[in-house]
Image (cartoon, rainbow, N blue to C red; front, side):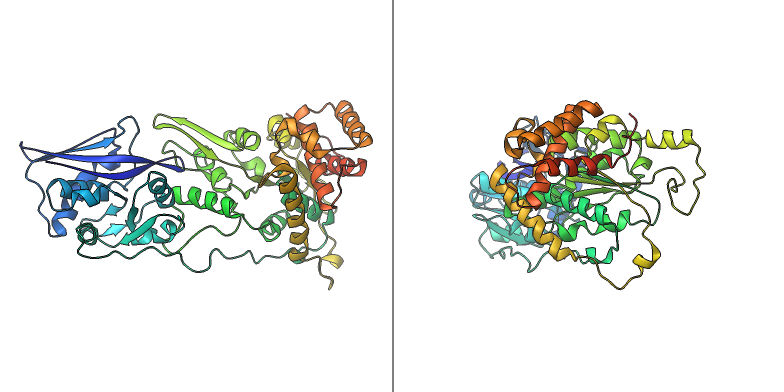
Length: 504
């Protein structure tokens, strides 16, 4: 006898439907899983056996052959526990075969037959809807994610026994429901930052246009403090952006059982000891920090201290806004459209250029330190601001700086103008190269000023286009229709700040 049910496997952030077919052969009792299963899927045979027995059912005394199709896609993860158990019980005549075939199942089983949540439940539910299934059965812990998919019946269960009783029509499983509320809004406010007007303006420009930014300055001048307040001035996610972010975080297994959709733009801040695999994704083809920061911010403090291979791995995501991973386990494409915010000291000791503290680094040591940032990486950074310590009298003054709410209002207005001009969700930083000049719409004098600067400085064409993108964002913050000379000059000043570029 045979039984057929359906599950799904994650390929990147997308879920691919998988047919789980079981055949019971009259041979010595054993379990064979075919169809390119990973070790975690092969090990599931013993969990499934124990879960079936613990749930009060008999395990077939036959050779159980489990086929996972399509066979050319690697099956990984623990979400196949439940569909394999249901296929075995359908083949044994315990579960209704006809009804089991119209539902998609996903869940990890304990030895006692309880269901544990799995990663990627949101993508799995989307795949079930797109494939035309009646609904999807998920562990109770994945209910909040599954409830985000409309047009699909999403049922949640706590055990294998409940799922079997539901398929046989003995009980009704509860429908999944989204939890109230969502992620907390950032509480850090820009009014806490005294002074640093140029850095504050650069942060506003970066937020408005999605631009990459690096702060350079001695310890204690406010680099990390400024970056930490960036979420408070970023606009809210659109419905499409929020769903895309949630799918990525779900695929990484980062959504807790009572969390629904991602409400605020991601802000990822990995330590400088992070590996390349953790940044862009590794052999397991899970999303890395660059993808988890999609539609948000990737903050890299002490940027030169990151390993060179980690920094250079960011080249493609910063330019193409996707991460392409080709491994033995397959090839996947992760979205990675983020704004890079980096912080750096001016030298190894951190006090080069400090007004009161002497730098102890030799010129060659400073040069080596600055050379950590290669030319291609510097080319991809739109804004570079040098910070100096704030005077104590101003630092402890009673006057408060502008609050995040006021800055956020300007940022949202600028983003709205960009969406109307560039297309929904397309920031100035993500404009295609051939659209930069037409959509930036610079005046004749502004274009001549940009050309003269590129020729005089010897910078690359990529840098020239990035300057024009920043100019367009500054114009949007002023509600200007066209990019003028002053906008170009401001963009140039924010990128070079009157100092020599970082050595290649």
